[in-house]
Image (cartoon, rainbow, N blue to C red; front, side):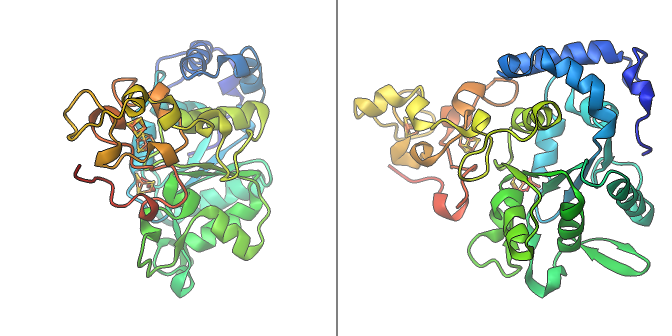
Length: 320
Ligand code: FSX
Ligand code: SF4
Ligand code: SF4
């Protein structure tokens, strides 16, 4: 994938989408409004994007994860996130969606990292195993030498202007770091602390994270820099509110009315395992699948955005 050139700044049709840059920007502004960012980004969003997108490549690497984070992102908003990632953001490397592969893809990635040192954003999906010198996760091979996820995280992390740790695995270790953890899986911050890498990290947890959290954080980085973060490195914009305190079932909790099953429409879900009181995210308002639904409506919150997940949330479900 070659770097986008200045064609992107002109109001011509983007080759594979059939939409013009102007209509994309209009759409993106709509997206920002739709995800509750309008007061922050409008009208700054359009002008900032016009100035700098093609100078801000994004490299997306993947370690130990289920690819649910990428799938969540690719299933998202209008304009589709596929359009944003492939045609708008200068995405130069993504192991699961790029056409290029092998040594050629890795070479291009390193070339971009050198050319845009200190300017590009590194997105990390999945955790990074430290055991066996990183050999539990091999991302590719160059000159007959295996390149581990640990190598990529250290080398690219040091060269990047900022790092987005997308998903609970990349942010805090997540499922691969659950009890047992033979591979010594850890999140980006764990690696950076160990190897004294100072590049700023934005954690966007969730297993998987909501697509708006990813898109909104990238938009914030491109337009206004690093967003304000909580003590766990998460943007307050999306992770600043407690689920329980804002839950539509709170009135049942206040009246001691508890649901015994997932299908009961009335009743707080605490007795069947809800972790809303310990969880900070805006799912209660944002909801999932284009606003269709969210976990508590059909089951419980399992606290997927919290640093101790999944061990601190286990068991996810309990019988009342
Ligand atoms: Fe982890 Fe991403 Fe959970 Fe999966 O790859 S955050 S296991 S939903 O998707 O890293
Ligand atoms: Fe709190 Fe969960 Fe009950 Fe909602 S369902 S009020 S988040 S415990
Ligand atoms: Fe994760 Fe809870 Fe939000 Fe569901 S409601 S996505 S479990 S934080």
